[in-house]
Length: 287
Image 1 (cartoon, rainbow, N blue to C red):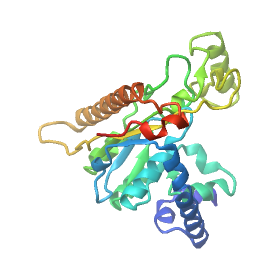
Image 2 (cartoon, rainbow, N blue to C red):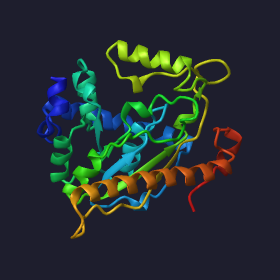
Image 3 (spheres, rainbow, N blue to C red):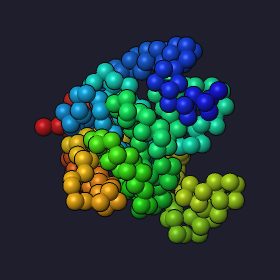
């Protein structure tokens, strides 16, 4: 049942009764969590860049904390009143009950070109992380960087449907832990081999981490989320599609990296960047 729900877009757009019930329950929980989110005062910039009709593709960066998977849809729903459709890793479609049903209730579907095409035909707001799981486990020196490795599927589908792309940059999630090992070091090579041996992918290797002190308790960090101006994907006459897809991909990546740099500049001067309660009232806010 989980695999069917998360791979069948028709079931996602017109879900069965139990998924609709789960969705209502999930929305109730999320709405109840809103005061707690506000208490932490995430830095939110560029909300005006979200197209009001909901017809856009959000392209984000993954972090070690994974908070972007919650915060981006939360912010968009509160701003526009629309459910964002996250495209997830294919492996999530094989999750046992009830995990797949819960993710479907939050609007998620297994990421594939056909899933994206179907959602775009219905003018749905979509969320994708081109770096996938390889962007979550950050080794030393990889914090706040993109690891797309040439992936351009999101750009190709967006170009096909003239779908605007809104880069969504999340800063702070890579700083809840400190990576102690490098990918090309002894532990990194061992971890990559281990991941490959047990059926995973080398890029899913895990570094050695520490949080507060020598523990794995996450280090308190404020989250900074910035939405850049929409990128027009409409192809001009005289440009071949392959070249235009590469141009859109590169422009999206550059914009996302630039937005991350802008957020880093804000955080550097923010007294509330480590969630110090005494600095709550003086937390940096968008101009």
